[in-house]
Image 1 (cartoon, rainbow, N blue to C red):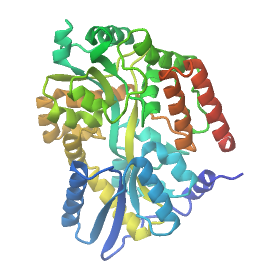
Image 2 (tube, rainbow, N blue to C red; image 1 turned 180 degrees about the vertical axis):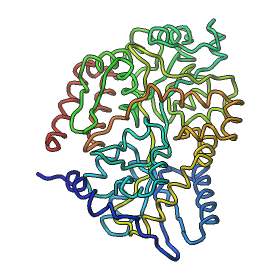
Image 3 (spheres, rainbow, N blue to C red; image 1 turned 90 degrees about the horizontal axis):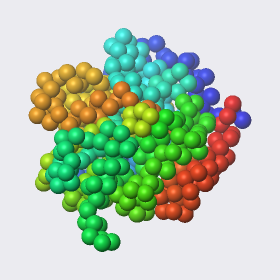
Image 4 (cartoon, one colour; image 1 turned 135 degrees about the vertical axis):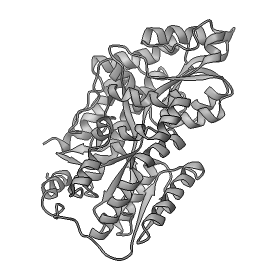
Length: 429
C-alpha cells in the first residue's frame, strides 16, 4: 500500500517547489480556521490581529473562522476541504501533522519559503516547537499557539503547611512529600488536596510528561511505533497512581482538565499541573500569591510541548499561498509573538520575541512568564503518530483505567500498546 504520506513527500520537491512562488497582483482573500470552544478574549485578540494585518496589507482580506475545539476544527477542515469549500490555513494541533499528511491536505511550508528572508524566518523558532512539524525532511507547520506543561503552586498554602513558599518541589520525591503536607483533611473529608494532575482531554499529554521524566520515550519521530508499556512508562503511571493510593495527596479517580484551574483558584488544591496557556487566567483571577515552576524531575526534567501550528492547505491557489505566507510571517513576527504571549500566556515561539522591549518589561514585572520558555531546554516533541487521535485515545483509556483502579499500570499500558501496534501496523514501511 502506498500511503498519501509517501506520495506527498515524493512530490514535494517537484510540483510544490516552484521557483519564486507566484508574485500575484491585485486583491486576495484567505480564511483560516482557529480553534476556540467559545468566543471571548482569544477570539477578540485574533480578530484584532486580522484587522491590524489588513490595515497594513490592504490588498489581502483575512477572515478568521472559529471552529470549536482542536478536534472539532480538524474534522471541520477535513469535511470542508473534501467538499472543495475549505479555508486556506488553519491552526491545528502540532500532533495532527501525520493525519494531515496522510490525507494529502497540507503543503510543506519549507517548499514555500523560497527566499532567504523566508528561510531565515522558518529557522527563527525554538527547535523544540519545530520538532512535531518536521516529517520526511520537510517542515509542515509554523509554531503559533504553543505551550508546555508547568506546575502552579499556592504560596499561601505552602506557608500554611510549613513549607518554604518560594521553593517548588524539584524532584518526584519532594513533590510527593510536599503534596502530603499540603493536603488538609478532617477525618475522611478533604478541604484541600496537595496536587491535581488532570486526566481528561489530554491525559496522554500529562502522562507523557511523567514518562519523559522517568526516562522514557512514548513514540518515535517516524510516527509508526510507540512504547507505551516500557519500564519508564509503567513507572510513570505507577507514580501517578501512588499520589492517590500511597501518598493520599491526589483526588481519587480522574481529575477533569477543565475544572483543574478553578479548583486551584478556589484553593481546593495547592499544586496543579496544567498548560502554561492558563497563565494569564491564573494571574488575573488568583486571590493569593502563586508560583510557576518547571515540572519536577525523576531521572530527568522534561515536558512535552503542546498546542497548535499554522498549516497551509494544498487546495490553496498559488496567490492564496503567497498571501498566507505573508500573514503567517506577520502574525509570528517577534513583536506579534511577544504580544500574543503576554495577552494569552502561551509561550512566545521564537527567541527574539523575548528580546523585544515589551517582553523584557513584562518578564521583569512577572518572572513566572519565563518559566515555560526556560523549560524548553528539557522539552520533547508531543506524542504524535499516524492515526493519532485513535492512538492517543487508546493511551488516554489506559491511563484512566489505572487511575480509577480498573487495571494495574502494567495491564492498562499493555493493552494501550497492543491497540497502538494494531492501529499502526499498516503504516510501517
